[in-house]
Amino acid sequence: MDAIEMHRQQPVRLLGWDDLRAKGIISSKPTIYRRIKAGHFPKPVYPGKSPAWPEHEIDAYLLSLIAQRDAGGAE
Image (cartoon, rainbow, N blue to C red; front, side):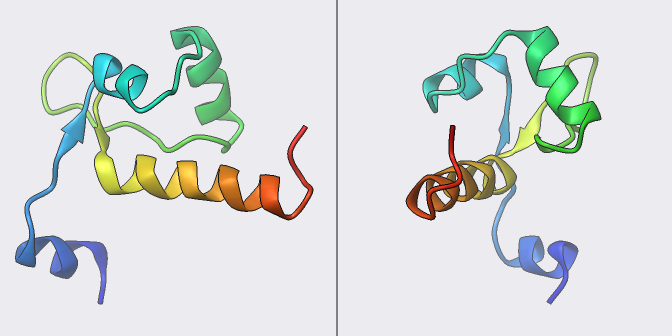
C-alpha cells in the first residue's frame, strides 16, 4: 500500500515548527534544513508559506533515532 492509499483511510496531520518542538525536536531551523539537505531529516511540504511535516514521517524519524540508540549507533 502506498502513502496515498494509506492516507485515504486516515487523515494526514501536518506539524509546524511549534509541533516539532512539542515532540522534542529542539534543533534550530538552520540545523534542521542542513539535516534535510543531507538526507537525515524528512523533507517538508508547503501547504502555504510555512513548511510542515507529515506527523507519521516525524514519528518514523524519531523511532529511527531510538533504534539507532538501541543498536549502539547514536553519538
